[in-house]
Image (cartoon, rainbow, N blue to C red; front, top):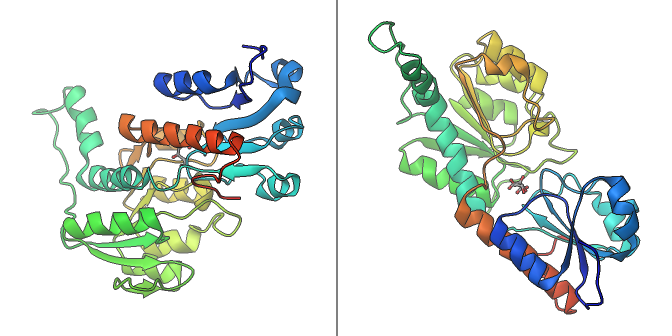
Length: 314
Ligand code: 8YV
């Protein structure tokens, strides 16, 4: 699509959005889908807004190619793939979809935990392979009474805690600081938390500070009966160390929604029954993606109407 003689602002869409959201975007804006730098060239100077996912972000070379960019409206909460310092320097606003996706991401964490501990996906493969009645099936592990350690106690972390409570698990957490009004035991060391719990759930943003936060020491502290659940960012985990620990059964299992180099998943994980893999699906429900999409659009509309953004980051 190219700009016509309308007053609709030009928007570049990096990540696809649901059809109804794309339609609403096209109702309000002149919409350009990103199809590589060459295709971007002729329209680059007309672009005033970008929509993108938290995982995709905005590559520095694309940002640099858009001289009139005013706003990046992220369809997610992660801004780790956007150069916020450069955006701020250029006066480019950044908004996310904070506040509408926390429950569903927390559900994914709990779902992965139940799946890997109870062996649901592994048993599904067993049944489909026709092994039932022919081969023995190992027993899985109970959740009730087990200890869950939540790393990062923001919105998503606190909802995971509520859900783990409902499963009659015991919750403790690690964060940079003890949270006011939170009565769960606080650990100021992630190694100490990993040592204390049966399941470690990662719910921190992907930042330089959290990069490789789950390293060999944390994995060893979690130990051969411990499970790791990651719905945060792949960068939070030293992935080769995790793959080695899972392969050598130095931890019991993992539920992983995110990876270092998506959509690449380490080959060794594909053969392991003690791992449940997802394709970064934490927010991928019709309900939440719809709410996220409308918030992305509402932030763009606010920007171009000269109004305050609904959910700004900068
Ligand atoms: C989305 C995410 O799946 O919120 C985030 O930062 O990574 C996910 O919720 C992603 O933004 C896809 O659009």
